[in-house]
Length: 232
Image (cartoon, rainbow, N blue to C red; front, side):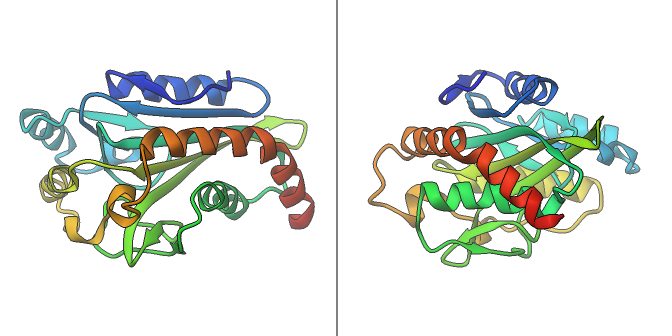
């Protein structure tokens, strides 16, 4: 199932690719980018009061909402967004921190560019394993872990990479969704895209996808084995 970048029309198609990777056996690298814009949020947000109203409002604004099984918060999807999903099986000593280290290091190795790791206040889907360039968030990460028996776990590590395009519209869509759910504000200005932060990068979407695919296929098994031994 390992393949270069897949362009899909709808976000639901990309989420289906990730679900298939998670259900497969062995290590799978999934890279996709959607043609239509949408919001994606963790399924846990369905428990928030007013969720169905917020979902309808988002669709009315032109941002239909999709649910994902990983954690985190709501994010905008659409042209210019690259999704990287790594699905693999590791022993139970492989921690969630190991998963975040793995996927962030793959991105840092694919584009060495002075990345910083850490939270970015007022960003969408903020977390301790964001990757930022010049103080602005360009990558968000999330994970899903499922026991599969034999003292092993199936892991889906996901990164949303802001490669190019209009950040303001997506940030405004998440901000409006947050307001409907009485969540915190989102500020477009704390985000950046790779083509803004690294203007010399040519064809950043396909260049990055090709590099990530090569590095992941070459190193993911070795990396997970190494990290699992270190955590033991």
